[in-house]
Length: 229
Image 1 (cartoon, rainbow, N blue to C red):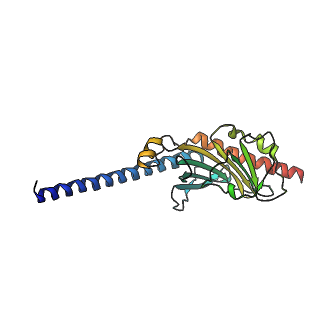
Image 2 (image 1 turned 135 degrees about the vertical axis):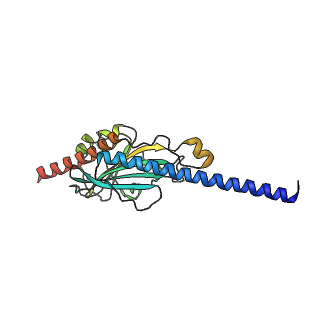
Image 3 (image 1 turned 45 degrees about the vertical axis):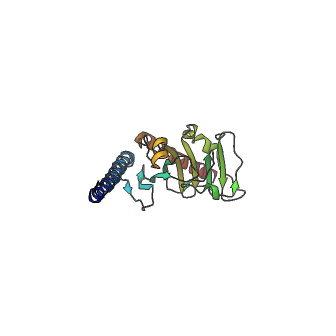
């Protein structure tokens, strides 16, 4: 084989590789765009006035709107911390309205490695826990010596009976629930280091259940506070 032929063959192979990589990148962008559009459709089925307010953070998409007259926020988060075996996709659902609590109440299920969606690890004070709350839960707060209506919280925390509920955060500014949507496909991530989520569809019924749970808990806490006043 002549040097010219060899050079042409090498160039052709290199061009083919570049074109293939470009095709893969374009296909990946198209899939991501379609998945985001599907998420938005699911969110608007529950929160019709939801608007995409994402700030460009990698792996995070945020929508804000109103549900039954209350401000609501929905966020999807891809957690790729190196300490995790597989990347994880989380759903964050919040009611961002005032709550009558004396500080931050953070209930984390099976806390282990740090997460990108929570400040749980930065809260200094661990709370004693009522037996009505899940056995796997750990409670933390930002203030020493404060009390929270744990009996009431337990009564409205039914979604945490399912293994996918991860965190319940209650602050004076609102209520948030974190839910596990999916873990990355093990084979694809192991071979290509791509965080591909096979079954991460955002179900409107699930979304409505979580929004309603957050809203109902907020109303229950505020109602008890008014009755005690």
